[in-house]
Image 1 (cartoon, one colour):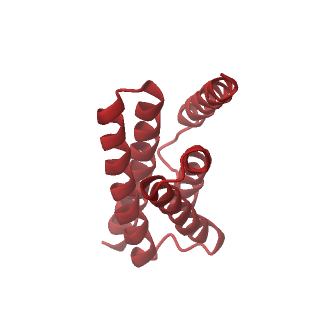
Image 2 (cartoon, one colour):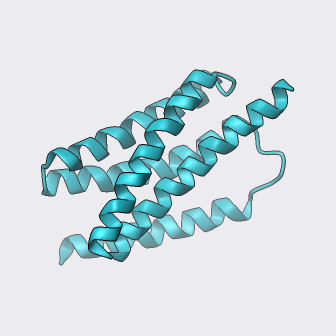
Length: 142
């Protein structure tokens, strides 16, 4: 029951954070700002997946956690080193995030659990932010 309360608090906190971020969205967000938003969502997702792996150390749970951590690292690289024009890093982040999103969608379909749906939606949102970074670079190069 204690884990349920912790997860509920995380969901509520994340939802408030997400709506706050979305309310400040402007048309002039830079790739770096978008990557920062993606990092915030991805870090919450990574923490959730780490907790799942600790509670149930299966290969699938470990893989999902490692994928989330890897994407977060790539996003941090984009922000810290201002690699927002590094197509290879962005492409790798998008590829791994897409795989993670699909894995989380499968888990949601298997369980029908609302918490698993939230994780899938988070992964999908981060994927859309990464695509947005990529599209911003494509339009700036033309």
